[in-house]
Amino acid sequence: MDPTSTKTVPLEIHDLTVAYHNKPVLYGIDAVIPEGKLVGIIGPNGAGKSTLIKAIMGLVPIEAGWVKLFGSDRKSKLKRVAYVPQRESVDWDFPVNVLDVVLMGRYGKLGLIRRPSKEDRAIAWSCLEKVNLTPYADRQISNLSGGQQQRVFLARALAQESDLYLMDEPFAGVDAATEASIIELLHTLRAEGKTIMVVHHDLPTARNYFDMLMLLNMRLVGLGPTSEMFTYEKLQKTYGGRLTILSEVADAVRQTHS
Amino acid sequence: MMNLILPWDWQRVVIEPWTSGAEIYGWILLMGFLISATCGLIGNYLILRRMALIGDAISHSVLPGMAVAFLVTSGWKNAGDQLGATANLQEGLLHGWPILLGAILAGMVTSLLIELIHHRSRIKQDAAIGITFSTLFALGVVLISLFADKVDLDADCILHGEIAFIPLEPFLSVGGWAVAPLPVIQMLGVASLTVLGIGLFYKELLISSFDPGLAKATGIRVRWIHYGLMVWLSIVVVSAFESVGAILVIAMLILPGATASLLSQSLRTMLGISVVHALLSSLGGLHLAIWLDTSIAGSMVVAGSGLFMIAWFLSPTQGLLKQRGKAGAVG
Image (tube, rainbow over all chains, first blue to last red; front, side):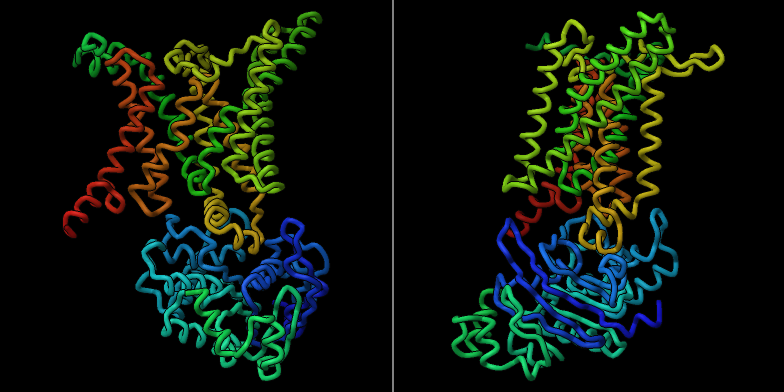
C-alpha cells in the first residue's frame, strides 16, 4: 500500500446528513477519527449508529455532507475499509460453509472473474485461526452459534487486510468468553496501527473497551477520549431524559437487547 | 373414471420411445432437459436472492415486448415486401433477433419497474412484482387483440406452446445434413452460455447474493450483476418460450433449485443436483406423458414436483421423515 497515505486521517466526516423517507436519521455530523484508535459509537436505539456506518460504506444514500477515507474520495479508498455488519443482515441458511464466507473477504483484492488463489485460501485459513474457528471451516453457516457466526464475520473482515474496521454491534448475542476474545483481537489490530470503530450497546463495558467514544443521538453529542466523554452530563445529553442514573441506563439498554 | 387412465403398456410407454420413436422423443427429451437444466441453474440464484417470483413475472411480461417487436418487424416486413427484398433472409431475421430484443427490453422494464415501485414507495417487493407483471401482461393482451389482424402472435400459443412439436420445427442443416431442430440448437447455445456465465462469475454471483453490502464495499457492481441476471433470465425465458410455452419455464425456475436446497447445503452441489433434477423430471415427464397420452411439458412439471416431494420427504436435514423420527424419539 502507498506508504505516504498511511499517515493520513483514516476517516473524516463533514456535515453528514442521512434521511430515510425524508425523515432525517443523522444530522450534520462532523468527525475526524485519528489513526490507531479503538472508537466506540454509543447512543440510544434509533440514534443512527448503524446508519452512520452504512453511510460511511456508501450503503445508504447521503443527503448532504461528505465522507473522506484516508484523505481522499470515499469510493477510491473503500478497499481499505472492512465492514462487519449486524449478524441479522445476512441469511444464515445460505448454502456456503465457514471458509467460503471468510474467503469472500478476499474478493475485493481479486479482479472480476478471477478466482481465489491458494494464497487467498491460506490467508482465509489464518484468519479463521485467529478467531479459533478452524475446526468449523467445513460447516454450513447455519450450524453455528450466534457467537461463532459473529466470529465468522470478524474473520472475514480480517481477511480483507484493511486499515479501518467498522463493526456494527459485534458483541450482540455473544457470550462473555467470545466477547473477551473479540476484544483481545481488536487490541491486536490496534497494536498493528489499525483504526477500529465499534457500535456498542453496553455502557459499563464501553468505559473499559474503548480509547475514544463517539456519542451519537441523531446529532453528534461528543467525540473524544473515553475519560472525557464518559461523564454523567455527556451521557445524559446523549440518552436524553431517559438517563437518571448511569446504572439504570445500562440496565435498560441491556434489557431492550436481551 | 378408470377408462380415462390408459393401461400401463410396457412396450408402448417404455420401449417404443427409445426404439421406433427415438427420432421424435429424443429431441423432445433433449429440449426438455436443456430448458429445465438452464432454468434450474438460474433458478438456484433466484431462490437464494428471494426473487423466485421474478422469473414468473418476467415470463408474463415478455408478452408485450414480443408483441411490440412483432408489430415493428411486421411493419418492416411489409415495407420489405413492397421493395421486393429477398424474403427468405428476412424471414429468418424477423423471427429471431427482434423478438429476442423486445423480450429482453420487456424483462429489463419489468425488473426496473419492480425496483422502482419497491424503493420509491412503501409497497413491498412481492406486491410490486404482482403489480408489474399483471400490468405488463395485460398491456400485451391489449396490444395483441388491438392489432390482431396485423400480428400473427397468439397469447395462448406463448403460454401453452407445445414441446411435442419440437421435432417438426425446421432443422439446422450443415452441408445438407440435418443436424438438429433449430430451437434445440438455440437452447443448447443458451444452456452452454449459462453454464459458462455461472462458471466465470461464480464469485460475483455468490457474494452479491449472500451479502450485497460487502459486495458493494469490495467494489463489485451489485446492480450490474442484478441487471445482468435479469437480462439473461429474459433471454432464457424467451428462448424456451417460443417452442415450449410458459408452464415448463416457470416451474423449472423454481423446482430444481428448491429440490436441491433440500438435499444440500453447498451451492456447488446444489447446482449439480438441479441439473440431475432437470434430467430426471424430463425423462419421467416424457414417459408419464406417453403413458397417459397427455401434455408433455405439463407431465415434466408434474414429474419435477414429484421429485421435489420425494426430496422433501427424504431430505437428510429438513425431511419430513426425519422430523417425524425426531418427534417420535422425543415422544
